[in-house]
Length: 324
Image (cartoon, rainbow, N blue to C red):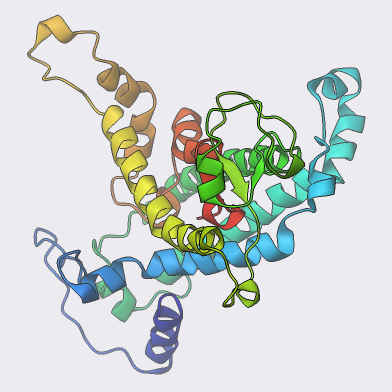
């Protein structure tokens, strides 16, 4: 299973003498992906990455998220920076939010740099190079491109970490209330006066809630229908959030491309063309993408791309769903 299978294959390739493989003509299109939605095997292969990130999210939530008592206190205020910047940085460095930020950057650097070195760097081999979609190395002319991609991607991860810090604080401070089950929560949507499990009253527009942790050992013959529905929703929410992320990305990406044909002069105020020129074009500088290219975006695009982190404001979700 990915990525273990890829790593084992790489080790085997490195230990064996690579066969002589003819170079594919540059004009020839690379082979298409071996997976696709029409077949069960295609669906399995397509979502192996999702299974990996579900497992990674479980580890992150179990071992790196702060306690709710600690996260209920916001680590820093803007006034702290104004009054004493150096003291404010010192306070933030010791806070739970700094741990979230450092953890996010460490995971990103490890995963992205590993795959970059595997495909284009120190660990690359003729066998691996031949399996790239584009055999031409985009980083052959120096380090400017990879440096730009690394800096842009890490700035995006900082934005992602800040979003995660905000949603953790909203959970801990009960601004997003705790709900016992989606069934019970649905009956209270839009009712700002209700309080679930004694949580602080949330804003009237917050229709989501934080699902309680689930233990399979608590389910037995005496389990109520609402509790079974909680378990069902907990499982169903994983593929649902994954698909919502795909839909969110599709429309966000489409929004940042021209909406109308250039010949239609009446539409000179094309917002999509404007966003492409000043925001999304930065991402398209990576015309032959590598691992670091995926998050090499303009900060405005990062702010929009990671905005689905706030989905618990509108749906009953568990932190594991947020970390997908």
